[in-house]
Image (cartoon, rainbow, N blue to C red):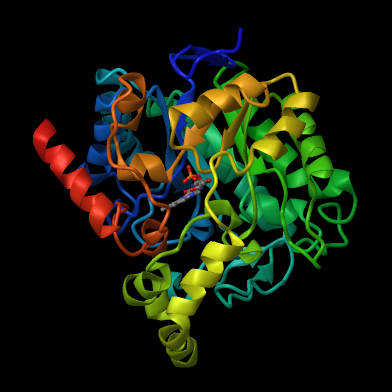
Length: 414
Ligand SMILES: Cc1cc2nc3c(=O)[nH]c(=O)nc-3n(C[C@H](O)[C@H](O)[C@H](O)COP(=O)(O)O)c2cc1C
């Protein structure tokens, strides 16, 4: 009998009383130095009140060059542990579980905004942000590995229920895995073994730091979708998944794409997306010619993006199926889920052990409760305006109609 969305599932030693998780969405809610704020706690408190069985934080940086936006939360120093502990205590008091996602942005950062010279596997320009990174040195790679391990030890200390390593979306680990962004000729480039070396070193260092049972999750791509470039397909990524399983990863969450793959990662309707991006998001920091072009073309770009990457429930499910067929550990799929029918169908298919949702929880923090009670709450229309403002405004729903429904619901709950 296939599980229901409300049956428990085990990810390694972590038993979770439900199979619909909140996936990582960066919060832009820390203070300027990356410390936890009340606002950030409130974001998770609401979802915990809604009965969400498990939440993954937005990506946290483990070291200075891994920080991709302002007001991103850090797990890079022991002084941050008390704030993080306040967050996990609040969530636990309300009966939910919480894992932290740790990432390194590599080249996917607006360097002029962050004020540092970004690094990557190789010096390959990131076209969506125009960032030109320099090749990270071997000595710096060793520092990154140490930073991830130290972050994992802090995650344990801060009371998180597990740690998720961000190995997808074209962030640093993914930049090493992918031949398009990794053109190195040393022991970190070329063969499969070499391109997976950074990931393997990080996983080993983390296990060493936190012991054999603390849950480690890995978020990774089911496909890079870098047409015409040397991106990875599902077959090789499944091999990465298998290797990670052998290195002690307890579950894999399957997503898709690098920034330069377009918006496959957040397939949507894009209504109002580009004008919000220009007015409130990183469009503000673009060069004048880029701003002028965007100012002129935004209605067309909205339509084109919605046509190229239309929303669909379970848009990464077919990749997940291929991971599930090859792995023994639980597989989670993210991507467009927002109805009980689609979630149940994903579980019925046997392709996944659990699903995760991002934008639907941003629209409706009580989404899990609504699923359980077969009640309806605000429904995300995947306009992606939340994404447009990432790094510039605290994460929230910015679709006027959906936001109004959300405010009304929160007001009624208060
Ligand atoms: C505002 C926003 C912030 C995001 N931040 C992260 C992040 O920090 N880490 C990550 O792995 N994915 C991030 N994502 C991608 C989501 O985790 C998820 O893969 C994507 O939104 C598709 O799931 P959904 O259709 O349920 O929203 C973000 C997405 C959005 C919309």
